Figure (cartoon, one colour):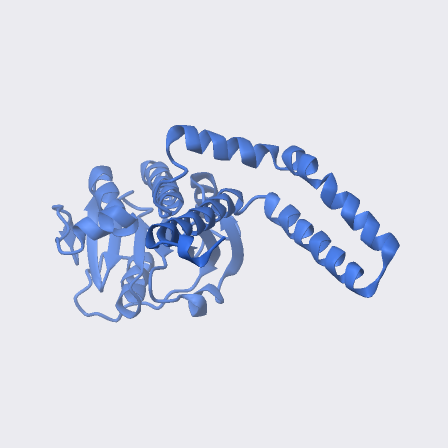
Amino acid sequence: MPFADFTPLKYLASIVDILLVWYVIYKLIMVIRGTKAVQLLKGIFVILLVRVVSEFLGLKTLSWMMEQAITWGFLAIIIIFQPELRRALEQLGRGKFFSRSSAPEEEEQEKTVTAILKATDYMAKRRIGALISIERETGMSDYIETGIQLNSRISSELLINIFIPNTPLHDGAVIVQKTTVAAAACYLPLSESPFISKELGTRHRAALGISEVTDSLTVVVSEETGGISLTKNGELHRDLSQEQFKEILSNELLVNRVKQASSARWNWRGKKNG
């Protein structure tokens, strides 16, 4: 094709074409991320690499085998990746395939908020004491090491079972990292503030203590009253209703809500610092 045929418009079309292809590949990777298909995809890359190496070294038999695997690989991919392909088509039909990349992250954050809300509601009604610290920007690895590492996907059932009285992990704090329960039975630093009400126990002091040295969000369920409290930035907010608690968690942990509430103060009438 003559060089003169490459007009600015055709250059632009070529660039757009390449960007769209890369975007589609990126979205496909996001669809299969976290599934078994990732390991299968690595296997395909290994086959391609062996094919190139065997051709370069003149290994005819191995090269022929890899060529057959690649020839019939398209049909195998359709069969192996059937669940992922179906999910991609479903997302395309719902218009989610070309949605913002933060959508999966928002969905995971919503699951975390829901799990904590359900667990605290259950434990508050039954007066089961609990201490849950949610890691944010400041790392909490030092405190995770003091407990029993779990690295389990968060769920309300898991949180409830951890804090059931007289179980091995109920004493101490649970530390949550994004959508994972990183560890249980962790030791948190106790606050030495002289302004803490004397009626507050060790859990509240530990919640205040960790909020003074990190930017974590820490939830306390009192085993004496069933009240829900929360600490952030060295402040303790007590006796929150379920609606108030839900509003705070949503504003602090969900991506879109954080942006909307970044310049706003918390709006609730809970008691503060005893």
